[in-house]
Amino acid sequence: MYTIMGVTGQVGAAVARALLAAGEPVRAVVRDAEKGAAWAAQGCDVAVADASDLHSLTAAFNNSKGVFILLPPNFDPQEGFAHTREIIANIHQALAVTRPEKVVCISTIGAQASQPNLLNQLQLLEQSLGGLDLPITFLRPAWFMENHQWDIEAARSGVIPSFLQPLDKPVPMIATADVGRTAAELLRETWQGKRIVELQATEAVTPESIALAFADLLGHPVRTQAVPRDAWADLFHAQGMHNPLPRMQMLDGFNEGWICFEGVPRTGRVTFKEVLAGLLPH
Image (cartoon, rainbow, N blue to C red):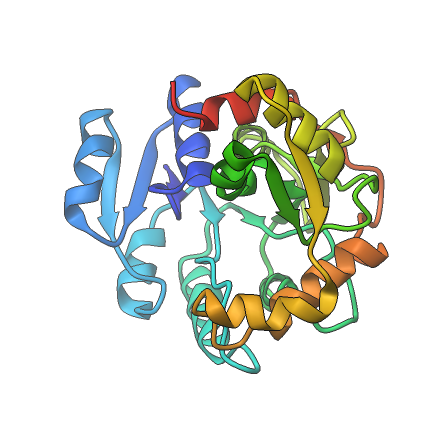
């Protein structure tokens, strides 16, 4: 049985679908039993668990051939990542008790960066799970292409504000479908110890090429406009964020180049334009 966290999200769902297509048994971990109904209809075992609850998480991981770990996203964390640390401790303990044959854990590009930033949450996860005596693969994907669904409204107006800068600088990106497919493939592999697998798309994506892709799909001119760094904090606070600094530091990391891959990444199959076309209403 392969146990999949985050199955109601894009990546977790892609992992589960790929395993089901390969004829593998899947346990879908959901926080709400109602959300598990669709997976039960596809033949999945369903476990209701919350990463904040060690007892339910341990029960979900029991009797697993492999476990797919996905840290619940937290884009506006407390200072010091207190809540994230609690969840990581629960995941660590649940895996230590249940001892699945192997673990695939979604991490991130730049998890090795020493500079403080939002992605340090995944670094903490790697450090914690790395102490377990289990075969673990840390899958480090690039920037998710699907993040640009938040640019659709701006693209319709013709100008996309960009925090990624300079506008002609390539940013490593990947489609969530490729992340899910790769994670499912890794779960079916056999290995010993710890390993890191990095993943990006075959094409280079820049803020300028993002605008061109929108223009082609929307049928009108679209350009990208850099948002001045000194305006970020006020903008993020206006959007309701309480602690925007880690997010700003992450963007600095991409822009300055210290959020990067350590080795030679694997490549995905899905292009940015394909992802964008799927995000736009038909």
